[in-house]
Length: 182
Image (cartoon, rainbow, N blue to C red; front, side, top):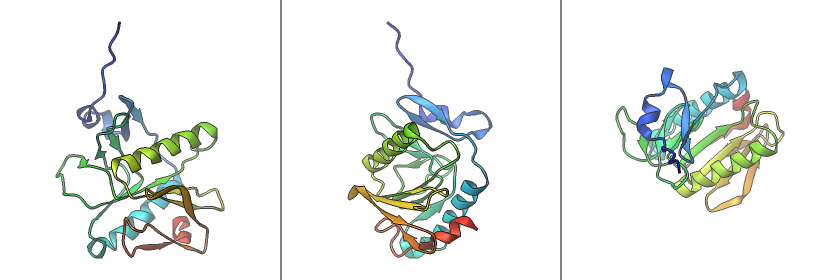
């Protein structure tokens, strides 16, 4: 009988070229670089969050920041943008899940299998303590689906020309959906 070695957070620190990855089911899952539109949208969310850090009581983080969690099937997250209310961890991954996470779909995040993976990741976020997850789909009329841990099966949907929010994770923060396309 062969025993599979489980990946660790230390393994993530040693990834070549500081690649983006998460630990899921004991494996390092590499995440491909994204394209123009998703990259710009993630940057826009981060910049907007950065502007409300003090009043909302936390810190904004851009893409490729690691959050260390301790779930049976997951040891880390690396959202496209996030808001965190815990302590600084210096040079290491942040301890615990972000209060808010934005996951922006890239060109390969479509189809039945992708939908299942996205839903499972959202469940993991909530199990780890995340309050709000945005599923951002720049190719859909339903651009931002806001999922809350308090009602995970009924997202609030925001379209172009509307203003999205992430209550209660980022109190008072609002962002025009159109800003995701700038």
